[in-house]
Length: 543
Ligand code: VG1
Ligand code: CO
Image 1 (cartoon, rainbow, N blue to C red):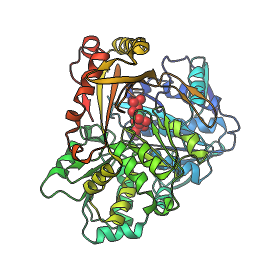
Image 2 (image 1 turned 90 degrees about the horizontal axis):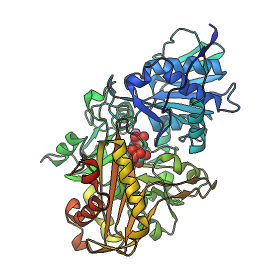
Image 3 (image 1 turned 60 degrees about the vertical axis):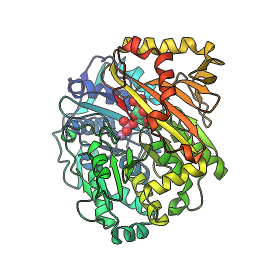
Image 4 (image 1 turned 180 degrees about the horizontal axis):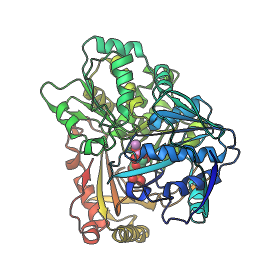
């Protein structure tokens, strides 16, 4: 075995987005593409010599080859040890858990998350720091800068190692320890929740359907829900991770998880439905014929947090991404704890969690989590719900309606316009920004604009600033419309339009969401001139 230095040339566009670098598999298959990015990452690390790196991914197509390349490069960089999930598998929250539990220097997560996989699908790579969370912007900006100047990378010429057998092997001086991808995570979940109560719930005949969407959440859900918690075999479906997610789109929302929605609407529907995404950090919660909005889920878990042993002493605060509905703000106010509003992407929660300012975090995009790791965590959210269901004896629908009655209902929807031309998307956002100074005071569809701005964030812990995080139109009655462009797509641009309206009165909380938001939808389309600039009359995906 020898360490070799290869000369290389920069690739354009190796800029991590909302959550790591995501590109088509075919882009990652170009010689040197992954190597350049990993070298640029390693070049920026200080004091990594001899330390431990965690490596794993969601098992999608190209995962296994990428793992071998990363191991050879980590050996060439002088890491002392790599903890690798068996088969190259680690869900995103499990990777975060292992980094923390084993005191690792950091970790590399191979995933394009909710994006489709397979030879024509997407691949991705993300670096997580020692707290277990996604690298902050100053690190990802540094990686990108180095990818633009890179001239060489170093790699061991060692042969592929066996990644499917537990135990230790060596590449150069570095030990590769293949670990059980589930064990550390399962132990952490047992500390968070009242497993006794959940076991009793299943023993009493409670029925659940967990759709793992042929993605990495399957082995974790099987081990915990069917194994440890005693739910009947077959409770977790689509549980074997497939390299192409069965050709489906592993995004747990009512559009892409329509099979689960159909099962939950059937006459013999189970009591509780849930799904997770490609890397198992997202979750969707569904009651009998009753999908729960992610923003409502965050608010509800916050309101009931003390039923779970980990949160029995109360929560320090809540953080939500800016476009996430303000339902959690009302719960936080009632609990007398702060609610922080951050830009989109889990990396912005890390400092708040590390500083102990918040305990729970959430995003409207089916992401919920807490200070137990530094990523959002799909199965954790599902177990939390099971804990609440067991402790209260109520149904999902009863719980959600009771929360609306207490705090009011935030009608909420996101409209995505996918795969539009980048130039058109940029023009649309520029057009919105140009209108900002004139919007305040105008009356649109019967509502008066109170404030219109481009969201900027100053991190309350380290003072770092992030500008241009989404255009907001805020109305007098608390309604709002938010526009931003996705940072996770790999084809053209995706415009996201977020719509929210607050309804305090219980007898007006039963409306259809799209109907309740209709005037705001009209405002969004006309102010942003969506049809005119993109040629799209309607969104591609409504959640
Ligand atoms: C989307 C979501 C965002 C989430 C991100 C990563 O980003 O909106 O809330 O944190 O995906 O989730 P964007 O930039 O496309 O809106 V995952 O499960 O794909 O890691
Ligand atoms: Co994900």
